[in-house]
Image 1 (spheres, helix red, strand yellow):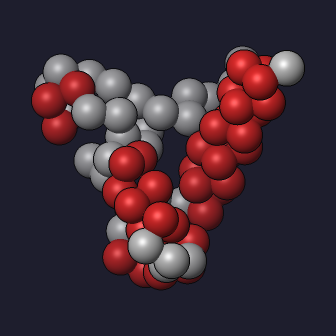
Image 2 (cartoon, one colour; image 1 turned 45 degrees about the horizontal axis):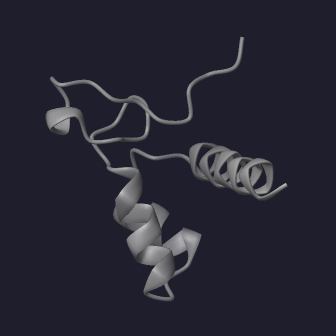
Length: 70
């Protein structure tokens, strides 16, 4: 069984989508990337998130975009 890429719970950040096991919203990663920052910059600022979690999130996002546009 595949681990969840995103977690949501009303008890964690009011239900905001976060990286599982953290309180770091996935939107924060997107904000970093949109601002021209790197994945390494993001990971330095949020050490509770792993590189594997970031890559899994980006791969899932890519797959969903490809699915909806085909």
